[in-house]
Image (cartoon, rainbow, N blue to C red; front, side):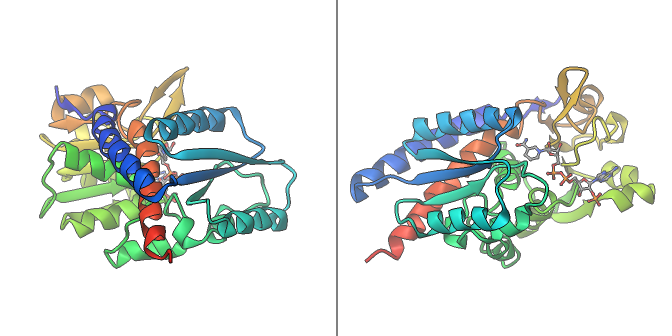
Length: 288
Ligand code: NDP
């Protein structure tokens, strides 16, 4: 059976590092990093995530507050609220919790956050910096995958890495982060499946990262022997959570594999907080 790549273990190391860094910055500058999470008509799934955010922020000494807006809010009122947070010097980072009501575009909302306060790294300017290889604030889930690869000391240079899924928050930024580390990176998407080429690509992957959201899309028998498999997918199936990869069969062929849940997930919140810490350090550079 493959080695389990557990997000919690990697998150513990990061927690210790961040806790020390936040304590030292707070003592030196007499104020702490502050995250504001904008929610609109918060649902049950989002409120679970928000509770975990608040708990992690408290453990690290980062301020955290929810700005809960009414479900019927119009785009212009949302933008006015974001402008208020942009202008508030005590606010370090801002994020917008999905899902948003129909009629409010996530892209437009995220683009209205100042890039210097964009806690999730989703502003077009921060996403663009990843192409230049200089992105410091990058999307948390993509970072979480890289963090797992680093924690488990997986070599990437010259390796065949295959990413399945090309969303702006996971697949695309992740493929650029892999490229930055000189992995030979292939990105698969719906048209790869339509062309019946998904299996061929999976079979040659030395590092496979799947972020699709379709239960057990990737068959265990397709996994290359010794491959490293990161399954980002979270799907509810008959009351249990499963990933996008057939875990049992894939685990017999892979050298390393993430469990679902317990793989990428536990790291994501910690990396959001690392982004807030990075934004705080950047903001201190421009203070008089
Ligand atoms: P999106 O729905 O935005 O993107 C899914 C991607 O998968 C798209 O690029 C889509 O391609 C591609 N795709 C869909 N069907 C196929 C197929 N049959 N073959 C190949 N590619 C396909 O999802 P996200 O990127 O936001 O999230 C992906 C998964 O990761 C979800 O399960 C989500 O819950 C999970 N997730 C987990 C997180 C964590 O912390 N663990 C955080 C964020 C997400 P196309 O656009 O061309 O159709």
